[in-house]
Length: 67
Image (cartoon, rainbow, N blue to C red; front, top):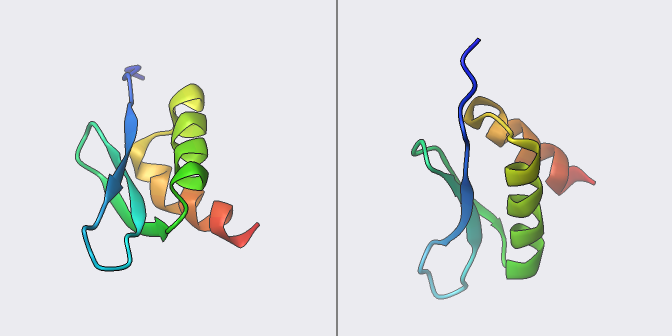
């Protein structure tokens, strides 16, 4: 199995009530995760550290939001 270097960053939707999401370097984006930048940034750092596959990003965000 080929090992890829995944990288995630915080993105915003630019709406009146700013919501932050997560975008990967492969183009996968999960929008409107939270209005708390620091919370989303912590999740982004964790995804980068653990090299989460973009295929699983939606599930990771869903689990994180349920905690």
